[in-house]
Image (cartoon, rainbow, N blue to C red; front, side, top):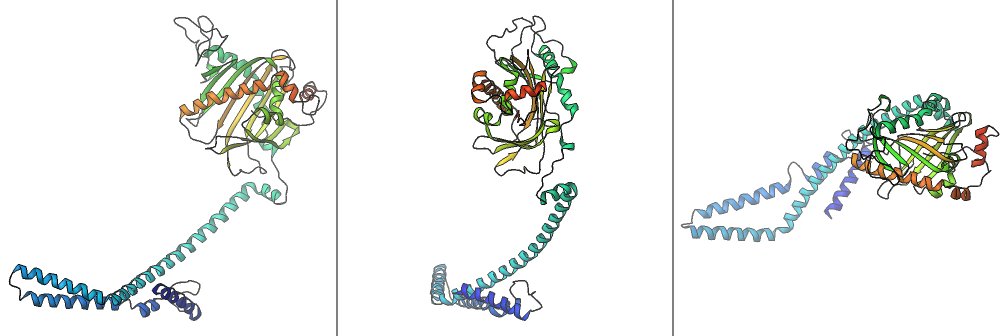
Length: 449
């Protein structure tokens, strides 16, 4: 009942303060009036305090008057025991009054705490509202100044992507044309014995590979042009090097060299550019689609979502992909680099990878349609998850070779020809015609590396 009376007093006083508009309380603030607390609970001269003091004084006076008649310690103990017994009886008799006074005092304290909490809440609410508004205005102004044209076109329902700025330049494509020659120099400098010319063991022996058995086997003097690439792993028909990232110590760049004698360059490319087929052979793909295209430069913006284990969020990529075919050198170069696109904002439930780039160079041993290729894949991928170097190394040593082995199995002639119909736009046959200049590709390829 006392709590109900407290609530009634609070809201009655708020209504009166709104109506009267007392100068001590603003009309827009729902606070308790000091006058209400003084009149209702008598804060300065609380009856609770007066009653308690009077009762304590009477007990002390009675106890001191009777102490004078005590002659020994036994009588003193009896006196104290009798006094506290009588005190207990008096408290029981006056229990209702004591509880009533304690309740009034409690209501007084609670009312003061509520009033102070309302004042603090109103003050900070006003301060933070102003700061939040200033922060929103500042961010909107900054975004409009940096991407004003984009925002205007987006508001009108048109998505604009600046291809002139984001297109991968010709110089970058040309710089990767020499990757095949570089990888042979890197092999000679890092994984071949200087004495016998046989292969040096990297992590584990591979079948049908002749390794060095020299007592004093040594690597040739490192070439200045090979950089800091270090042999990392070896699998069947594949060699992997890695190099530490210039800015991030726990991040590495990887370079893979592979040689597949039973696969043609065209089939190897077709397996990667056919989106529907990739969803069948690559079980890690959650989604792949082309976002935007620039036919003038053979460029596409691609969205790619990769499945991660259940304990982690999926990773998704938005990157610019450009490919070129050099018919004279018989080379295919594909370069990917992460980019931002207005029509592909970050997706809930997936973590956007902010640093990703890769380059693949494919060279046929004879011709694009004949079996036998060698390729070089160089890439850097920051998943945004801090991991110890040994964990990252274990993941790279298992995931990267597994992907390339699966890619090789999907590129087998009998399997790919049964899954992909030749002669359709975007198929292997139409790509051959595009390479020799007979016709144009009607459907843009979607290569994911």
